[in-house]
Every structure is written in C-alpha cells, then in structure tokens.
Image 1 (cartoon, one colour):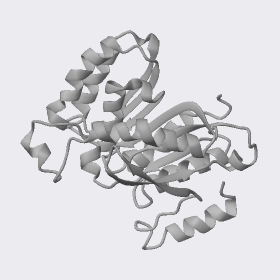
Image 2: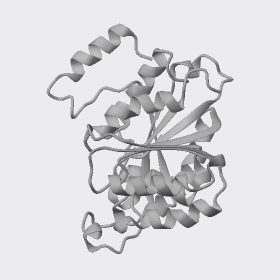
Image 3: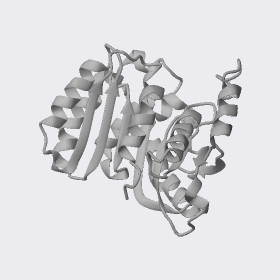
Image 4: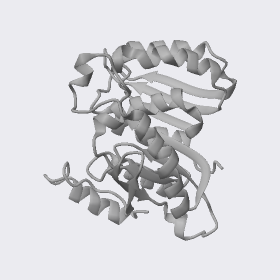
Length: 270
C-alpha cells in the first residue's frame, strides 16, 4: 500500500517526460512459467495487497489480466487496486498480469476475414492461451499464493474480446468478467453468433460487465449482445452492458477500470 507522501512522490515522478515509458506501479513480484500449452516461457507479474503479509491465514480473490506486462496495462490497474484498497473502497485482491509475447495471436480466435489475418504474422491462438491459463497458470498461482476460489478477469480491446470469448466458451473459468471496448468485430462478429447457442446450454453462474466507448465498429455488436443476453434466463447471470460515448478506445480502460474494480470487489465483501 502506498501512503499519501509516497503517492505525492509518485505523482511528481510520473509527470515526467518518461512517464509513458516507465509508469509508476506498486511493489510486485515476477515469475516465469515454462508453458507446455504455449511452447514458450511466459512472464507473470503479481500484485499482493498490503494485508497479504499481515494475516497469514487469509485467502484472497484473484483478478487475472491479459496485457499484464510492466510496459503494458499492469501498472495502471495495479495502482488503481492499491489505491482503492488504501482508501477502504475495495476488498484486498491479488492481481495477476500476463505479459504478452504475441498479443494478437493470443487474444484472437480463428477468422475467415482476410483483413483480420493481416494484423499479425499469427492470429487465432486464443484457445491455446486459454488452455495455458486454465491448466498451467491457475495451478502455479494457487501453489505460490493464498488464493480463494474466486477468480476474475479484466481486459480491453483485443484482450476484452478474449474476456468475452472466454465467458462464451468456458464460463466456469472465472466468476467475474470485465471487458472494456471488446473487439467484437473480429471474424465479422462470429463470436456473437456463437454466443446464442453457448448461452442456451451453459448454466454456470457468473458476473459480466461490458462497456464500449464511441466506437462504431463495436457499439452495434455490444447492443446485439445485450439483446441476446437479456433474452436468456438471467437467474445464473449478473450482467451490465453500458455505452460511454464521451470516451474513446484509448481512454476507456483507465477511465472505467478503477470504478468497476471497486464495484465488483467492494470492501467488506467476502
């Protein structure tokens, strides 16, 4: 946890010209996994809440995040969590950031759209990335840290697409899904078409939050998803889908992540 004086120092440091390259973040740990599913080493960054070392019997929910490298989205999400915990506005959680190697490969499913395949040398690897998280990363994190049964995932853009795809394909992996401006346009919106059948046969309970900024290639699909999920039995689902036309694709993650993390992991919630 960062005290008021430390936050002031960090604010001054982070206002420098190098802030974009070296963003401030709370203390954290880093380890590597030699992944069989991915056939490569993966770097994992872990933020532990201040109370982790105080109550050695306590267990903590875990929030997983793609784009979780030190030069990616891990610093601002970890800082938002650390500040919320310090203010008593959020329950202590463990944040697990997965650093990218080939981002566009890992965050996307197969596609039949030629322009999709042009964004990177390799795309369509989300199933393998999901398998890595489920069969290797969960086990590694649970072995290293005192984790509860609660798992959440948060991401934006292509990482948001991966969040929604995981909700559709394997909802039992997480109990909380938070996706900002998910790239639902991928493969001409095929995930939305698949979601109808998946939602019909999946009874696992979960919480889903989705939001889009002023994005004409995402908002119509977001609305279609809202209509689809609203027409299903909501007894097993707690969901919110919102639009923020005042925000952009570049600003939505930082604008909404602090408040949404506080909302879905409120202080005092067990």
